[in-house]
Amino acid sequence: MSSTASAKAIPVEDLGSAAQRDRRKRIIDATISLAAQGGFDAVQMRSVAEQADVALGTLYRYFPSKIHLLVSALGREFERAEAALADSPIPGETASERVIYVLRATTRGLQGNPHLTEALTRAFMFADSSVATEIHAVGMQLSSILTKAMHPERTDVTEDDVAVARVIGDVWLSSLVSWVTGRATATETAAHMERAVRMLLRD
Amino acid sequence: MSSTASAKAIPVEDLGSAAQRDRRKRIIDATISLAAQGGFDAVQMRSVAEQADVALGTLYRYFPSKIHLLVSALGREFERAEAALADSPIPGETASERVIYVLRATTRGLQGNPHLTEALTRAFMFADSSVATEIHAVGMQLSSILTKAMHPERTDVTEDDVAVARVIGDVWLSSLVSWVTGRATATETAAHMERAVRMLLRD
DNA sequence: GGACAAACTGGAACGTGTTCCTATTATGGC
DNA sequence: GCCATAATAGGAACACGTTCCAGTTTGTCC
Image 1 (cartoon, rainbow over the protein chains, first blue to last red):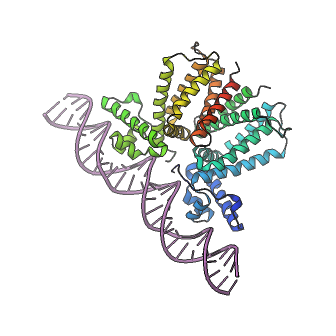
Image 2 (cartoon, chains in turn cyan, brown, blue, red):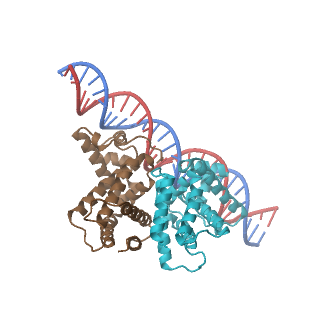
Image 3 (cartoon, chains in turn orange, red, yellow, brown):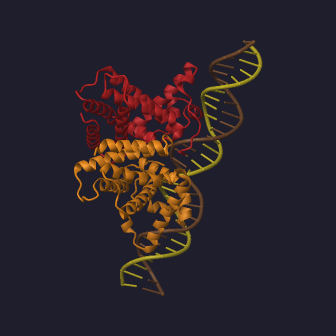
């Protein structure tokens, strides 16, 4: 895994035929399935290609590296989480209560699938600038989830809100890394995150 | 790079002979030299062994994986930074001013050597529980640097101080990752960190 | 100094991410 | 339907982290 994979991934929009969109979907399905089963190490490019019923070269045409592949999978998982949260209003009287609720819900989802979380988190932390597009998408999703939890009614957010959301995101990521790498328990992780949120959103 | 390197590194204290301490030093020297030159990818185990004038098997006896090696190098760099800061009192009237000073100084040091920083940061983020000992040491160093900046006079620190220091450390790490992976400029990184510190230490 | 164990050397070998090449198959324009 | 082009299949080949082994050197105890 060199960190200098230079080629770009094929954007989803450029996938002309239905067969191509289907291949792409099969590839990400295979990725998530393998990751959920055995984590980062189990997502082997040959296995993904085989399970997606696609040649190795084709896999690399769609995703120029294992990291691109996993970060794209992360994006899809985030979309799911965002959609699930949008279904019902977020409970909680204050911003910090709502943010903690969202973090708990999301983290619970992640911790229910430790291998998958490990694989996706590792990929995210290892990604370099060649994955900037995919990373940026994920960052926007996270920021959107958090600012929505802070101010469910507002559609515009202040610069300060974004800054707070970014710090919370930072803490969340660091905690996630500590957890997936076995340096902290789920309980410790949750406690640390909630403490940080209360420090940042004193309401 | 499998994430399941199981063996333990040889603790420094267990290195009996002077020849062994010297080998260990040569290995870390070579690691830092290669990392400073070409980053994570340039730290190739064969190159490190060759430059340290040591057989590949011996390198693996001292450091059971590339990650252990780089995290140990990070520890040595942190020791240097901590010693440099201990030399003179930290300027600044308030805790946040002093913390920002320390972060600026440290970050400047890191950004003066982007390849080295990239290599060490990547390794830190990728480390799993088999590197827990080394990681813990680095975490303690960082925490100590930050709490000292917050309260230069005090020798005891409260639980709250440690929690704040941990959050600042989280933000610092995330920012560092954004920077080394080319997703944020040095200026953006610095601004984000300082903003976070002011949010956390309102003094 | 000799005998034994531990450490070291040099290098082969293996796994997995990545690249590359050729033959075959789908796709779109006429 | 037919051709030109692109996309895919299948698989060899390469790079680097890691493991392993046979032989040699170093260190320790008597």
